[in-house]
Image 1 (cartoon, rainbow, N blue to C red):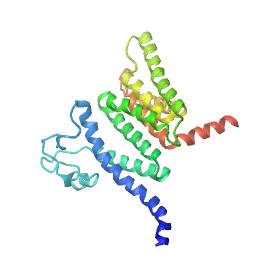
Image 2 (cartoon, rainbow, N blue to C red; image 1 turned 45 degrees about the vertical axis):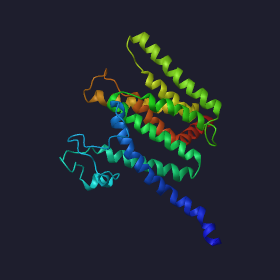
Image 3 (cartoon, one colour; image 1 turned 120 degrees about the vertical axis):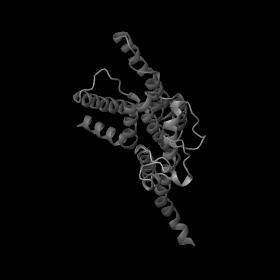
Image 4 (cartoon, helix red, strand yellow; image 1 turned 135 degrees about the vertical axis):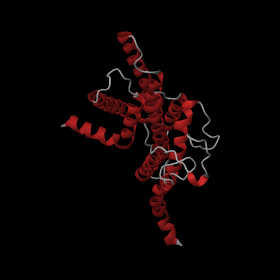
Length: 267
């Protein structure tokens, strides 16, 4: 019995990423519902999932993350309409992200907090990609959670979290105001301001700066690629999607990048 008790922490640690993977797959399935319904003003809890083409309710066995999509060969069982590959990809990404955070951080409150941030960023990225919309129902509570989480070990200090959130909001607001005055059109929506505040609350000032840099870099590369394919330079790109991508990079490898850059400056 004593030997089992000695091994229990090791077993718990080894099992945790697999439990996180399973939980992440389930959250990924629910995230697909949120991504589809929230921008349309629909309830995310009822009615049950239905085929967008024929309206047929999805049975429980047809709603198993990834497995059901593969078993159905990516088509509705009723009308055989295609089911977008995005659905299993979101589920897989959420499961992998949860497993990575659990493996990296282990069983602590900070792990759960970063899972919340990761989920919010994936959902916001795809909603903004589809609708050019960043719902307040995600960014505002997300900012509150980020500020509250600053009380936990490993997080930015409460003052840094609060100042970073304010800097994100006001900084993006200042850029939007300057753009409107010089160009006469809106450049950044208030949803982007609020998302920047959420990122600052969770990641602190260094993480926010790195996220914005990553977003600007990736947005520029995508914009250049689109123009090279003949797309107009005036076409609006979803900044929130790039902020989310930058935030995810910062979430997983931000400390490594910041440490590398700090060492580079000291050379």
